[in-house]
Image (tube, rainbow, N blue to C red):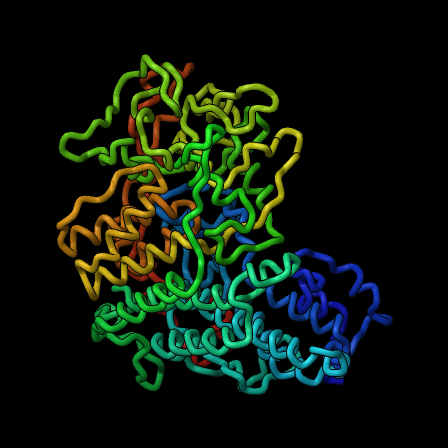
Amino acid sequence: MKNLINLHKLLIVFLGISTITLLNACQKGFLDQVPDDRITIEKVFQRQKYSEEYLANIYNYIPNEAYRNTTIWDGASDDADITYDRPGSGYDSYPINLGNWNAASNYYNKWTANYRGIRSATYFIQHIGANAELLAQSGGPERITQYIAEARALRAILYYNLVRQYGPVILLGDEMISGDIEPSAEEANKPRSSFDECISYIVSELDLAALDLKKNYTDQVSTDYGRMTQAVCYAYQSKALLLAASPQFNGNMDYSNFKNGDGKALVNTQYDANKWKLAADAAKRIITEFNFALFRKNNAAGVFDPYLSTRDVFLVPWNSEVIFARVSNNLSGWERSVAPRVVSGYAAVAVTQQLVDEFETGTGKRINDAGTDYIETGFSTVATKYTTVGTYNMYVNREPRFYVNVSYNGSQWLNTSEGIKIVETFFTGNTGKKGSWDFPRTGYIARKNVDPNSNVRTSVYVARPFVMIRYAEILLNYIEALNEYDPGNADILLYLNQIRNRAGVPNVQTGLGQSEMREKIRHERRVELCLEGLRYTDTRRWKIAEQTDGGAFYGMNVDTGTKLADEVFYQRTMFERRVFLKHYYLFPIPQEELDRDKNLVQNPGW
């Protein structure tokens, strides 16, 4: 029968099923109840338990990207490098950075998974209303309405994930779809919608979903944290509208010949300044209608501490800055991957010299500013709040966020339960290149989102949500868009300086022109949001990736050094020459999808 799904397909459809608490894997109870090896899809929408598990599965289509090594968002940006170059092991950023890929490579293919999630959400929306068990309960109809809103929001988010990677995509809408997991012949031969149509659909669906959702996680019971809220909907609206307003998709003449087979243009090449206003308004809505605030933390003496504030925003669950977080995640895998070998870590995610150079000094100077107090040579003779005597001067007197984000040669590891451990990334050091492939190719290791109470050696990790969207991102979205359509607006400096003050750096000077302020905002966005998976999209939507993501990439000289004080190690050294071609701004549509859908056109240049 068409409506019967065998157990193999159920394992796909219900991949990562969780209970009503959501995002906490609990497959066994459901699969154990499958009679023989079959269950009817109708039964799923007759029973509350099965319907809620189906919805939980849709949540699981939102990628679990806490373990960032196998994503491309950091390793294929100019912020980071993933050490491993093992073909076929899922470390796709390495061949991508070298330009060794094409439409058949299937690197970081998220097209198929996102559409499976979209189809599952649509099927849920169409069928949950007939759940007799839910309808018979007091408050059951209202719960069905909420569940439909959650599925609608999730579907819109999956479309956003597609457009940021592939550009304009196929919109399926609410049309009836087959009960199987694979698309019908009719569904499989649809053309792409235009990029503006995709953004309009995402925005309108999120608006519709928000009508039937709680305002914020603070209005939910704690066991529902991680479910959709109005705040999450509006945050994704902000992200989508900012993408649409940016140079990549707003007046980009490079896409003038980007059309469907029937001649329909897929990207509007006429610049529209109003898109920036829409993006600013979407972010401002979150600022004015919700009670989010930048997370701030005092030290043991009761004094505000910018280091603790910018570090612990990821460590204190559900604080004032968190908009969306994933409860079930793999932060333990992340913490092991960025820990040095001296504590049994892998040191696998390296920070580039380009990112190191982006951090300001404690007085708010850039390394190349006139009158900078940055020193690049020699070793310190006095200890500071963040560094010890003998630290290379390049790493002394940097802003607090540098010490939050980067483990450098000579830095102290966060966990001290087994004594103080010093990170050594020189050649023969405890995390150096000699004799291991677990080393940072730049001499720096990513450090953000590591709990100091986690002990990698004993595999004791502090469980916490993985923060996916936070208020600082929304503030930066707002001031970027505002600067483009209303430069000089007082809100720009107000919110830019709020972020800087929380980070312990001075205010930006007043009286800057639009282009100067644009550079300040982009710089602040890179530093504040580094290693959070946003830089990859930012350089592409700004249409600067040809400058930032290609050419020589630098770190320290990891092939040298036998002790911390070996100055030969502290030399800017090219570790990789990356390739970025114009058509890399968009990922290729997987070749198998083009073979299946004859109306689907490939992205330009592929």
